Image 1 (spheres, rainbow, N blue to C red):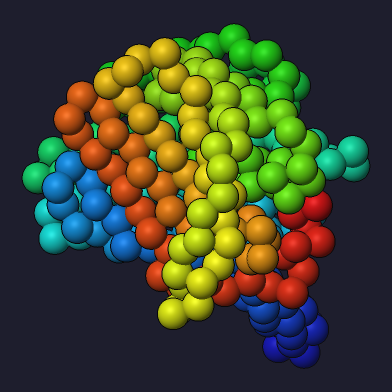
Image 2 (cartoon, rainbow, N blue to C red):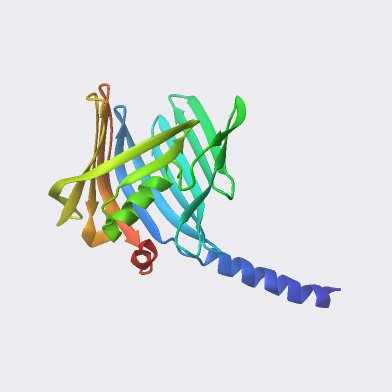
Length: 235
């Protein structure tokens, strides 16, 4: 019996070892401020195999925690197809959770929270709240010139457009880096969103600043680790 189990056990151990050996394509760390609270933010892009990936964002502070994850795949034509998005927030002891489950055809998503769930019709190409940010990075690397994104946020459909607003030098590890500055188009004068991306670092997000009705949210890049394959993967 043990002789018959040995090859199976060996295969299991080898398979588990290879799965664990997959290194993240990207790991970034930011300092962040959310509604006056200081947080640390880490974002990681991991391969899951069979052209599937997980993009995670974790912000943590003394009295706040915000976690997001986007599981998606890339098909043979290079399209990004969202599969599952999860959001978990706890601020001052008040928690909020929900998830989005996309169907394979990309024309429907199930929104689920503690109150229940419901189906939402979407157009193919619609992304989730985290994945569109990674797609913006890819489009900058490709210099596509079209920075327009549709995505589902909670149970609502949103449509964001960004435009290049200039260039600016920012510091990372004491080194000056040239950055593209983008501005989100917004008809509401009480809102402003600015983003800075570094072309010399795979168009990584260096800084983000968002203000809305007197509240603000900002992040600044503190450290960056990229797999040598990341830039090729991004393109």
